[in-house]
Image (tube, rainbow, N blue to C red):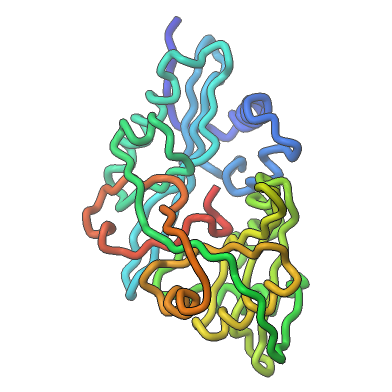
Length: 294
């Protein structure tokens, strides 16, 4: 039976959502956890169709990577799924190859997996990070939990846009991603956002989620701020959050500060990357457990 591979259409989404929820069987529906991806306005994704039925899907969203004033355009891939009766027939690979063909005008493609399919299709492991369990240490700080106020949202957006390299997200998209708690949901935990202030100015923030891995772990999903401010916030949080674990760019100032205090292990970036523009290989890409990765 012929299988047609094409770009997604607006009226495909109810069927795509049913397929994805049936394949992944997460406790939270996929369209709730990933509102930007499972969205009728998304025209970047692709489907496989057989006998007028959607039997495969590859979720794609546009992405921006900023570094030293340059902006690289790319895409992110997540939620690749194939109907059970069509698995093992090369449907996922065909969808990936269609995406790859369409991505030639881009600079990079981030992929939310490290499986054999992606590696055999030219994707690479990328980015080296040092993983720390943060030692607890207190100092007088003004820390509060994120309340959802617009002023806090804009301050978070402004601070993350001041990093050496960062993925571009509009405040509106950032608001949706924070509310979705997608990474915390995948880990089966609860997302928390902590803000550190100097007077009225936000100087650091940390996004965390807890899960169990031979005991409770609190994972840092995203953070931003100057190294000293981030270190102080992380150490303060480590006094109450169990096994606060953080992945930090190997050559960063924050990494050097923590190396002087505690042990670490070296880990790769999450997922894989397809380099379309060779210049992107010189960019220190943030750890891809940021708010928008999946």
